[in-house]
Image 1: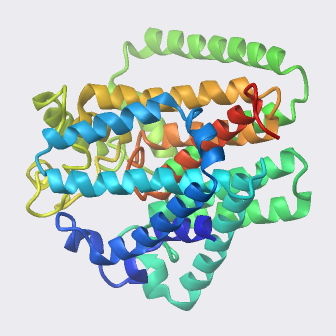
Image 2: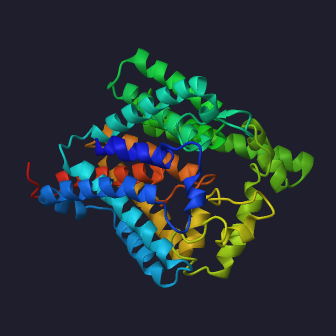
Image 3: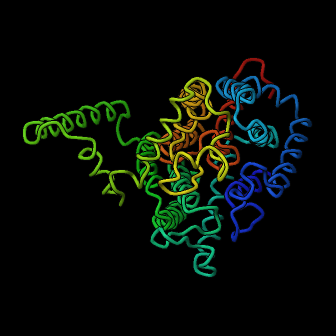
Length: 413
C-alpha cells in the first residue's frame, strides 16, 4: 500500500489539485499540502523499518556506498547553500525516499515484488490517464504542445516516462515468461500509444535504446557474446564508412549537421527544443561555483530565486535544466556530479555481478538504470526528491542491496 501511495504521490499533482501549480506557489516556503502528503508515509515507513530492524540493518550494510556519500555531501551543502532552509527541507524528502525504499525491502519480501508492483501501478496509471484524456480533456491535455496528453499526472513528461517504463516492464515480463504473450503485447501497445500522444521524445528514444539489449540479454537467439562482438564490428565498419564518405564529399561536419538528423527523426529542432541555450546558461552558472555548487536543490526556486536571472529571456520560470547531470554540477559542484555518476555506474556494476544468480531481477534493474541514465541527458530527475524516476532508482538500488544481503555469508534464511 505504501509503495502504491508514494508512487502515486510522486506522479500526481500535490493535493490532487490539477487546477493550480503548488510548486510555483510554495517553491521556497514549502508546500503545507506536500508536507502532509509525505510525512505520514515517511512515519509509517520508519515504523516498518523499526519493526524489522534486524533485516534492515543487514540491508543497510549492502547499500551502495555512493548513495551514502551523496547523502553526506548533500547534508554538508547546508553550510554553503544560498537557501539553507530549502536545502534542509529537500534533505528531509531525500532521506524519506530512502526510508520508503528500505521499508519496501524489509516487509514481506519476494525477489519479484518491485517489478510486479511497479508494472501494476504504472499500468493502472496509464489506464486512468487514458480515461481522463477523453472524459476530462481540460485536465488530460496540455495546451501548447500539439495538445499532448498529460492524463492524471503532473506533466506530459511524467506520463511519457511512465508509459515507456510500462513498455519495458511488460516486455521484460514476457521475456522471462512471467506474463502471457497476449496481455504483454496488448499493454505494450497501449503504453506505446500513450507515449506517442504524450509527445515525449526523450522517453521514446530511451525505450528504443533499452528494450532491444534487454530482450537479447534474456532471450538471446545466438551466443550473446558473439552477437555483441559481431554487432560492434558491423556498426564500427558502417560508422567508419559513412564518416569517410562525409569527409571526402563535405569536409568536417559542424555540430548542427551532426545532430540535425537525430533531432528531426523525433520531431525536434537542432537545439532540442531550446535545451542547448538552457544548458549553455546553466553551465555558465556551474563555472561560478564548480567545487561546492549553490547547495542541494537550492537553484530552481521559481520567482525570487536565482534561476530566473539565468533563463528569464528564454521561457520565463523554469524548474530544471533539462539535464540531470548539469543540475547536479550546478547544485553540488563537481563532487556531487561525480557521486551521482558513481551511483549509476556502481548500480550497473552490482547488477551485472548479480546476473548469474538473479537474472530476471538484475536485468530489470540494469534496464531501468540505463533508461534513467539516458533520460537525464534531456530531463532532470536524478537525485530530485519525490520525482518518481528517482524514487524508483532508490527502490532499484536497495533491491540489489537486498539480493546482496541474501548472497552474503552468514545470512539467515
